[in-house]
Image (tube, rainbow, N blue to C red):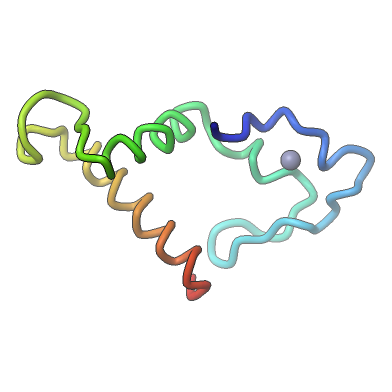
Length: 87
Ligand SMILES: [Zn+2]
């Protein structure tokens, strides 16, 4: 399951400047998980279903909402970058 962002990893200034995603977020002491919206967590949870061929609405890929496909492609792209370390 995905982390909910209710952790205490940034309590008492422990995480000061700990998180940084080049080109996305500047160095921050706020746990990066707290910046992820509920909608984004939901889309991330759908990504595994997408990878397994279970689509959002009945029909083929062309029947899916364009924005849904775009979101899934963005997640796939970032997961690839994260694994290769070239992001
Ligand atoms: Zn945290």
